[in-house]
Amino acid sequence: MNRNFIYVMVGLVLGIILGTASYYSFPDKATAADVARYMSLVSAVFLKLIKMIIGPLVLSTLIVGIGHMGDAATVGRVGAKTMAWFVSASIISLLLGLTMVDLLQPGVGIVIADQGGNTANLATGAFTVDNFIDHLVPTSIFKSLAEGEILQIVVFSLFAGVAIMALGERGKPLLEFADNAAHMMLVITGYVMKMAPIAVCASVASVITKSGPGILLNFAKFLGGFYLTLLVLWGILIVVGFLVIGPRMMDLVRRMREPFLLAFSTASSEASYPKILEQLERFGVSKRIASFVLPLGYSFNLDGTMAYTTFASIFIAQAYGIDMPLSKQLTMAAVLMITSKGVAGVPRASLVVILATLKQFGIPEAGLFLILGIDQFLDMGRSATNVIGNSLAASAVAKFEKDLGPAVDNEASGATPQAAAA
Image 1 (cartoon, rainbow, N blue to C red):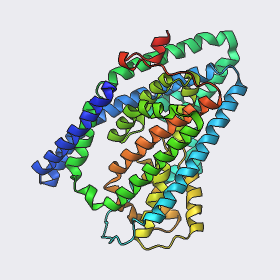
Image 2: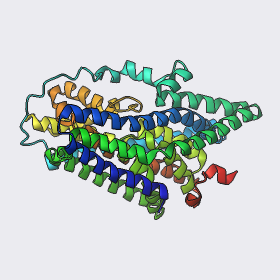
Image 3: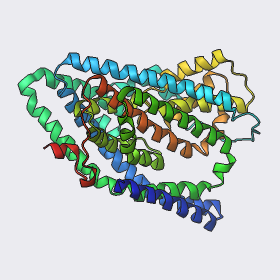
Image 4: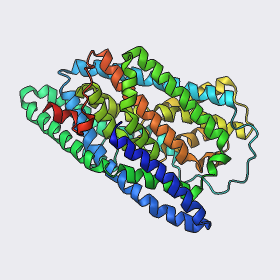
């Protein structure tokens, strides 16, 4: 078993124990909140280091991936296959969320207490068409890197990669520079990942110290229903994986254990990005495909988030006794399909999307408070699901392009695939 996976798992268990002990040791909520805040500083540092890596890593690897495509026609063909996969996966995830929430009815019978407060701190305007364009088109690549705008970095990288291809021989030094930069970022990633078990422990301990283990029981029906939905979604993804890449799907799942657990315990898809990229190349997905598909997936293929938006929106409607006929639910799914794209890098993006949807369909905004307290636990499942969805997407596109090679079993050495090939 992968040693890093064991360390992260140990960190997760210790975090649960430490958080539970801290919660009962500090019965005063204000004191517990302060303790939780200090604990979260460790995980905050880790996530900041990850964000420091993500921008340059996406930029360099995507440029290298496109540069190795050979011509613009190949880029267009691979891009079309990638987006077709993403759209199909999003539709399945949205409809699954609707189906499961209708079957399980987790919101029926809930007593709505006075929630108080307001949701003004969630900027629903972030998902208008105008602001989506702002998130899409960069004014400066340096500004995009500084602010962690993944979608803008992807757009610039597409232009840069195609331009380097067009330069021919003159573009080779630039491509080599980008390749060397990607190698450097992967080495830095290795250093940062040594902190992962401690960050996982601190993240989980912080949440439980503040909210207590009992919060899971209070929302057991909703949490259980959503995680059952994710379980079904995982099953669908694995079955589709078997149909596309055959028995190797189980090897892919095995290799994604560590990034899956990392995303789950930190509730951050970004935290697992470097590890997914590394494991995809070890699995046999070529660098050009992995470097091209994965960054796009972080903006357009968030399967767990898709299922959550429909599940949570209808849950809130059920809690308020609002009738949502099938036609209205399908309209909501279509709206969510559009508004949820490009959420990478936007804080609490799924909550923002849900709040905008509640407004649009006449559901009380205060309903958001029903899920706000447990969103961290929900985000853990969403982030982990995104790992499965994006790793499968990259592997499937590689298979379609006949570019899925044999696995490279060098996990024990800790060497990156690039280093092994050098």
